[in-house]
Amino acid sequence: MDTKAPIPLLEPRGGIPPVVADADALARVTAAFAAGSGPVAIDAERASGYRYGQRAYLVQLRREGAGTALIDPAACPDLSGLGQALSGVEWVLHAATQDLPCLREIGMVPTTLFDTELAGRLAGFPRVGLGAMVESVLGFTLEKGHSAVDWSTRPLPEPWLRYAALDVELLVDLRDALEKELDRQGKLEWALQEFAAIASAPPPEPRKDPWRRTSGVHKVRRRRQLAVVRELWQTRDRIARRRDVSPGKVLSDAAIVQAALSLPADVHALAALNGFGYRMGRRQLEQWQAAIDRARDLDDSELPQPGQPVTGPPPPRTWADKNPAAAARLSAAKSAVSALAERLSLPQENLIAPDTVRRLCWEPPRKADLDSVGAALTAYGARPWQVEQVAPVLVDALSVKDAPSS
Image (tube, rainbow, N blue to C red):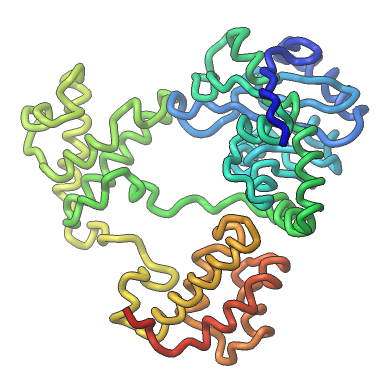
């Protein structure tokens, strides 16, 4: 067993490149990366918690023959030319679904990709963060001290740029090692299907009623109070968008929920609540109170309904009463999927989406055979490798008639 201590990775091989911040520099980088060879490592840094939205504030790339590039999307907001130059090239990202939305905003959309985090999950690694993967697979340690900084800062400090360049320094090496490991385990085709699904997925639909995701909203039961949450959330969102700051810096979720539960009658009562009195001026208090008053004045027909509209099966905790047979099927299916995932050394949620299992158990096909179950899984978005692995155990689970004895 190799017991050598991991080697700290302190500096990019070619040093820290200058930040690309004008059209001429971007054209040179685009030409260099188009002429490079092999996959291209790509990463993006956002300013979550500081700025409104999830825009990219730095894009890092590395490719054999082109070296490393650091691009400032604030100065170069259209990277579609670079994206087109890399069309057909495999993009290597870590946790691709986190970065693809902000890359898409600036014109960069991959045609094919390799996700090193997802590859680590499928290969059964217990820790799949980039630092943990680089250390366990390649024997190097990455300094991770700048992951949560404000990347909208200009100019970006040199230690942050070094950190950003190092994030793509070994990404292709990690990809190559993981490809070999997946192939050794007989899972490479599984991974390629997953990567293809990510690359071809359309942008997600805008979230319906995003205010319902306010942290702590489950404490709010009455419709009038829910209306207060909605009005305060929407007011906060407008202010945050206009000021280009994270909504949490304008007003905390906890303060929104507290105001909804208390329904203060005026600004004096509002100022007494946590999250409103400290350092908040009269004008700010008045705008929040106005939002509360708008909710208070709504007709009953305009009040939001409690809970979100259910588009799938009801919550599993209610199944035993509503549909005992479905509850028995779900219990058997969860046990079978758990055992199979353990046998295959991968997380259950990567083997098959839990929501897919619930939908199948709530409303199974009339004939629970391999073909019917496989067709149902495919209709819910399961990949061929998932259908091949999971369908046989789900056929058995769907034949269960009675709830397990306690």
